[in-house]
Image (cartoon, rainbow, N blue to C red; front, side, top):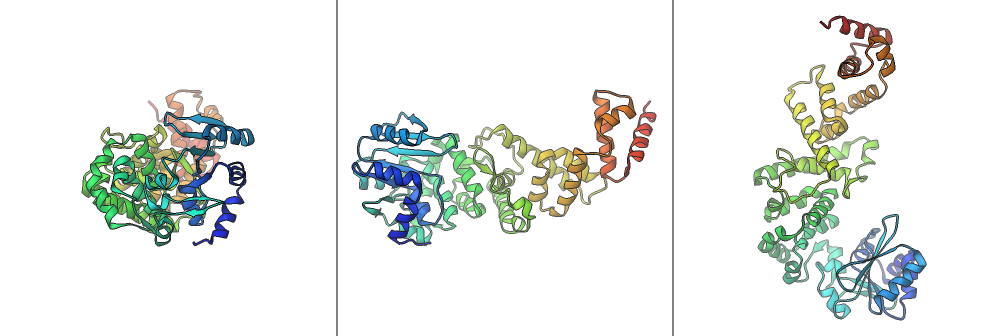
Length: 405
């Protein structure tokens, strides 16, 4: 989407925060830079909000804090202050590194080296707006990639965001500098990988990163295994997700953990197939909830794949093994035909024919492993339709107890 200068100005200043910040900074020189302008030119809303302040930075940020509230966060990096709000919104304010033009020349890619103010309009010394239109990721210089090797990985993430291409020269730089990625902290690598996995076309750009030699440095897996797993993500994105029930589609962009969406989680589960997700050689730092979810998905998937045909008891065992990952198993293994079956399992598990209190009264067992086994077996019998009424459930429990030595 292409905006005229007037349309872009309206889009930026209709935001209350921007309007007030530019009004207060009129005399000193304040510019929006980077992601916010990039996303505005793409017609998207941005969570990034970065301002360059030419004048007294601390005084200006204090004035803005007095208006909006929030908490001032100062970093070791001189000339950079963050204003954070309870709802997770953050504003970054920084002094320019040299002149504004010099500052823009030190950024990663042309699409992020654009500035704007109400007085100057767009300042685009590297033709980033044209690259946004053409959907091309182009680094400003090889030295900028060397200065921050995370930019190697960010190239694929931004290409995925644009659904575009990385220009040939930039890609050649990446190939020559690929080993530098291992110097980057695990936290920063993880965030970029997760952003990439969240995108609609992650498989295409994971494949680029694989062939450029970057992905094998991040994941401790063989090239062929990564290639197969990426093929699985391609199938997920281009076939499976397109035919998901609407009530599942609406949760794909919901954040699960560490900014990883449910769609990103499904992609990660496939990407780490046939590997130990907790290996120390992986350059991904995952929360305990993500590790647990991946482990259960892989266990449930292995059980599903062992079944050449689903016997009567097989679905129940698969759902019990994978627990809250059961839906992930069905989606990643393209068994959407079992989703209704899973819903029935979940309803029975939540509200069986007999409540726990009723089972205790019938069995005479109040607690302990044996009671747990009886509850499990009763729910399984109901799921497999061997028990269809309260009377049958009571008889099932009594017979089960009588059969015990």
